[in-house]
Length: 531
Image (cartoon, rainbow, N blue to C red; front, side, top):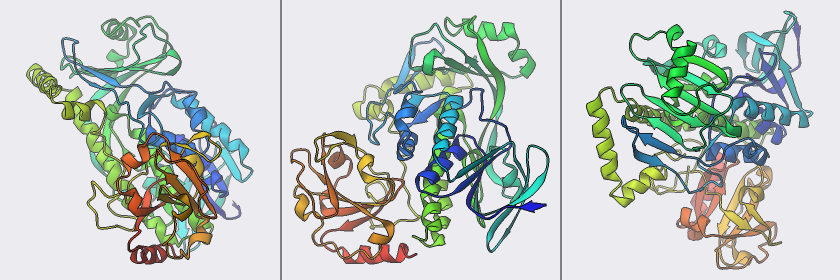
């Protein structure tokens, strides 16, 4: 059996998560081998919802604008009772992270975009039609036993392996890693249409015990329906042409539109007990299975890729010790499970099992609309757990989890640069670590900061953000200055004037260095960032 040379990172699975991870690693300059058992990316519709955090990760990869071009941007949801009258709506208008909080896309188009983007990188090797049959680990990394398209087997050695190989994940089984959680008893019928006669661009959620369902508009005039199967109904029965036609007639004007796919699914709420074993990491559906009621399954997988990519890159380049990789599961498990729990709660609203429960839910939400702060909490989608870490590769500042900036994703405002152009903040932060000062005097913005022994090793980018009502003057040497155009940075980062914020490549705040006494935090950072 032939054996290839060692690769820094090998990705198994060329779905959206594997392709995203490959793009990020390539942006960071890391050689990657991508293994996919299928001969091409998916062609059938799958995931349909993308959020602001995912678009921000795609922005780091230089793909946000191209992705927005294949999305139906910025839409919400209307919840309907059995009488088809709306009793609640979700229509977020904020863009704290620089992108709409919820948009629609087609997974085949996104995968094709991500795969095409990889053609730019000579240090990326894609092997479609290759399947991993077994793996072994030793002190030097991982040896994969792979079969090529012709059936011939070879060994491939890699320092690290990222398993993005789906919900049934052969690699997860090879590692003997179990999953916790449960599987829904109810099955759902998914119907994807090639077009639509319905020009309503919000999602309709039918909270009707007689037949819970969802009606989702998609990009390019497409539409998806999801209906819960009732007790006693079979897969064959609900996918029959007349049955599907009747469902469509009862839920809008789209009966007769060409059907791209109709399939019965079972939903899961499950997560792995281990996110990493040795030098192998689990990402996406291989690590967690999320009910679709919140549209967070794919988005959680893209968060996995964003979290792991820069850590692998920093270790491969020798910038940070390999111990940083242990923080991957620490940081991702908490937030991934919070989103699974949110989806479960939304499912309870969508699937009342009696008419009495449905009416009580409706009455409750209609009453809440009379309380502006609560109504705003619902309509602005503030119930969605914000990305924040209580533990991991961060330097805690002792603040409360709800208020501290440490471990939270940094806001991304629109900023004005020294040449008076308008951009999003991340275009200035670059793809690496950044140190942010919020000050009306850029020339003195970093005065009093102790020497950062890790600054050159991390190629740290210094950025001074001036308040909204101050012009952009040149900053201290080796720093950029931008203006908080609409006051969004100051609004979302209270206390920023009193601290320097060290931001990781995935845009999470790693440390908040107090101006009045910075030494202890800087020393803690030096210990954590040792190579």
